[in-house]
Structure formats: C-alpha cells, structure tokens
Amino acid sequence: MLEKYIDQAYEYKLSGNIQEALWREKNSNWLLEHQRIKNQIDTISDEKQGYIENGVLLIELAQRTEYIYKTATAEVKRKLVEIASSNHV
Image 1 (cartoon, helix red, strand yellow):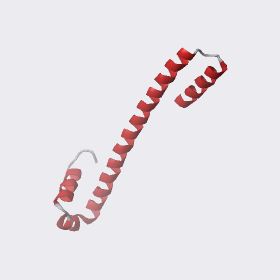
Image 2: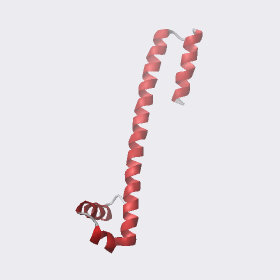
Image 3: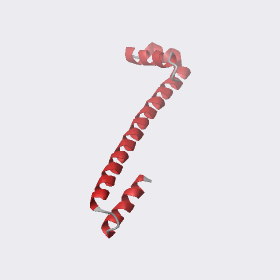
Image 4: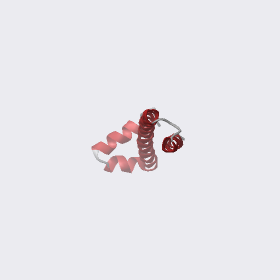
C-alpha cells in the first residue's frame, strides 16, 4: 500500500500535479516509514526462526531424550534444559 502511494505521488510530480517540495517531503517520510516497516518484518522473521529452531529441538528432545542428553555437548544440554523449562514453549 505504501509503495502505491510512493508511485502515485511520483506520477503526480512528473505530471506537475504536486509541487516538488511537497513531493520530496512526502517521499522522504514514506521511504522512512517503508524502512521502519521492513525492519519490523525482519525482526519478526528472526524471532520466528528462533521459535522454529527451539521447536525442532524440543521435538527431538521429546523423541530421544535419554540418547540426546547422554551424547550431547554441554552447550546442547544447556539449551535443551533451557527450552524444556521455559514458558516460551
């Protein structure tokens, strides 16, 4: 939707229906807003990936708890215990 406003405003600028100064101001604001939204989407995507990774570890833990815990590195053991005891699952 925001990109539509940017494109339409640019067409208005080219056709002379909007003043250059107003177009620059609006375009600058829209580009900043576009970047802010993109950053939020990226943050959500990163968080989602973390939840997916934790979910996979939890499923593995549930299926093969004893074997994983006996053979895992200290770091993996710590992560599995952290996931199993957290409120985020």
